[in-house]
Image (tube, rainbow over all chains, first blue to last red; front, side):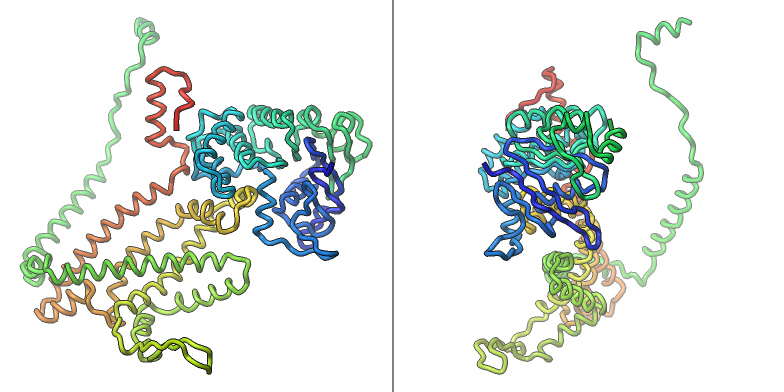
Amino acid sequence: MTPMVKAEQVCKSFGALHVLKGITLEIGKGEVLCMVGPSGSGKSTFLRCINHLEQVNAGRLYVDGELIGYRERGDKLHEMSPRDAAKQRREIGMVFQHFNLFPHRTALENIVEAPIHVKRNKKDDAVARAKDLLDQVGMAEKAGAYPAQLSGGQQQRVAIARALAMNPKLMLFDEPTSALDPELVGEVLGVMKKLATEGMTMVVVTHEMGFAREVANHLVFMDAGVVVEEGPPREVLANPKHERTKAFLSKVL
Amino acid sequence: MTDVDTSSSTAPAAIDAVPLRHPWRWVAAVVIIALLVLFLYGAATNEAYKWHVFRQYLFNERVLAVGLVNTLQLTVYSMVLAIVLGVILAVMRLSDNPIFKSVAWVYLWIFRGTPVYVQLVFWGLIPVIYSTIQLGVPFGPSFFHFDLQAISFPFVLAILGLALNESAYMAEIIRAGISSVPEGQSEASTALGMSWGMTMRRTVLPQAMRVIIPPTGNEVISMLKTTSLVTGVPFTLDLYGITSREIAAREFEPVPLLLVAAFWYLVITSILMVGQYYLERYYARGASRKLTTKQLEVLAKAQGTGAPGGGGEGA
């Protein structure tokens, strides 16, 4: 079976700054991968490379067997047209640290936006599906509310529903609970846990070690643009082998 | 002691304090009103204002049907054209394409850098500079021939002149609006698979409108008044041209006819200000945590029926 995400020696630099220095990973279908590490270690950048918000400089990145951001013809790579890149992104949902809901649209309008205008679904179908999704994330009552009227946790749950509305085969979470008050973290993690048990393939950049231990199949510890250590979360968290992992975990746990 | 007992069971009485006095506000108001009365009395009794001429021409058919109508048309047409061009220029300036970027920059440099009156006179001279328009292969055969001097179109040239000048200013206003939308917004749209154009149209521009509209309202009002410069083209059938050039020159009464023009400019400006208020309110939706009137009604209704959390309402 082709893995959902396959990264081979992925490198990314911004000018002279090398952020990713050869990341090699594989994420199987239905798996949950958690990425942890100090800030600036490249976790978010790697996540953004997966849906081509950033262009990879070296190495190869495949989602469901398809090369991201480039077309391969013979042994030459051709830059992908914006149109084709947009098509690839439709299959990959992304949830941001700061939610990035559209402030001028209600919760429901946020969710139906892409299905109606990108996928050209019928309005009635999109609204019905959106209501169903709002119900799943426990936000059915707030369909008509604008993002500014919602708490952080509620906004993030709407953001998750918005990403799910495109029926993605892969969900990316970029520190989804880092901007939340501690008491609101649980409601968002609850939704994510449910999603994981339903078989969604997920890549989660997080500082929630409890979530990683409980939900993830695989844990990756990154530092300074490389994967320092990886393995089953319980093992890595309980017996870190590498010095840097030990130092990091002693601070967060 | 008895007071304590009663207050525990009933709500406390509303505070009835003596309001803070502002004696100097009253003094200032009296002085200003006195000055205003003096000025109005002086204006009413001063022969030079010729109020009977003002009254005679205020609703004059030539002033309204030709002057006012032409001024309004010039304002609306040139502003619409300027906004369309402004959006295109702003998007060009913000694009990654170096050719678009530099073309927009040069355009702005020229049209913002020269006075609008000079531009209007120049557009008026276009038929002299370019007497014919030919479409064809350079130095080769011509497929299409258009004689500019054969037709007279000062009205079109006036609109073109005003719009091209204004579009440079609108481009900067729109660019500022677009830049004010947080990057996360276009990122979220991109991640949902939207194209760049759709992201602009559905996510960025609607949010930019909140920043764009107040200065654009300013520009519309400014444009209304700038139309009085089309005399440079020369186009003389606008409000100012009719009152001051045509009627005042005939009647030798410049003062009352200037007042007629000023009166109508003020009336239109006032109407525009009301329109701007409603436009701003429309594009401010979602910007505040405050519930809208509609949302409050729904909540009040739910409270009335006593259904806790009255969700699940039909579409």
